[in-house]
Amino acid sequence: MIVKKYLVDDMYDAMVKIKQDLGSNAIIVSKRSVRQKGFFWFLKKRVLEVTAATETEEMKERGIQKKTPVVEKEPEPEKDSENMCKEVHELRDIVMELVGKVQTPKTKAFGGKNALYDMLVDMDFNRIVIDDFDTYCEVKKVSPEDVNRIILYEFLKERFNDKLKVDVPKSRVMIFVGPTGVGKTTTIAKIASSESLIHQKKVGLITIDTYRIGAVEQLKIYANILDIPLEVVVSKEELQEAFERLDDCDLILIDSTGRSHKNTQQLDKMKSYIDVVDDKKTYLVVSMTTKNTDFVKIIKNYECMDYDHLILTKLDETQSYGNIVNAFYCSDKPITYISTGQVVPDDLEKASKDLLFKYAWGELQV
Image (cartoon, rainbow, N blue to C red):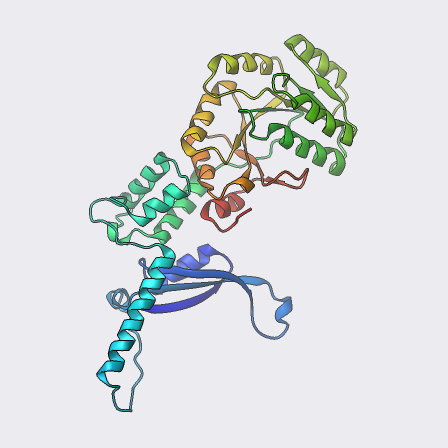
């Protein structure tokens, strides 16, 4: 087995170098953030130290021979040779166990209990993403035994570049829709705090969420802290009147009643409220803790609301970020914000392709 260490800026550079040096069957043993050595090391930026390994046989197939030093002393006894061989095999077993690498079946890229398939399931990728990766491997003519994490990395990087949209739009009216408990009200509080305190905008709040106990009270607390107006409405007529009273506001945020994606009648009723509002952007708020099958159905069923953007919340409450990928597979709407905790307004970040990829790949954890 050949083991090499790389000092790189990010995992993409590491993947490229590892594939060039060690081949497509190389495995990542470990990665950690370190400072570069030398004088004034404390002023140097931190880099990634990535350790990778591959079996000697593959290196030979690639035409790369491991240099063997000339040994002038007498050969070691056969017993020592056997012990060394045993230690090498034990090291190989440990490495294989660390990365969860198993032999790939000969039929399909995801046949049987393939370790990479299990990893995708653990990351909560939807079936449509997994099937697309299978197709990707076939199109790229990657043989089943060569399917590994490097191929997966290249696939995800390509799909992020081609499919994912990110955008922070400018609109005077922002309407937030989504199921109950996904964090709409807290997200509104974060945006209101940021726009009011940091950007010095005059912000107004409207809630039509009179169904859920405590929802109005929660928004009232935020409105009182920020010293901004709050309008509570129970009809479309009252909604129009609320807009007239908030006419001097630079930004108006509307909190809506949480509705199940399975109740089309309730969704249609909420849509009737939204339709009376002009110059608006509608944001579908979805929780990352939702299992992928329900996550996809929520995104699809809420299309009747004509939402413009997606906000992903509760990244701090899960270790599986596959729904980031599921989102842009199931919707062509851009992702605007991600919520990484309950702290107002700090735990809300503007979405970017690089940031979302790092979460999806596992480079970042909340």
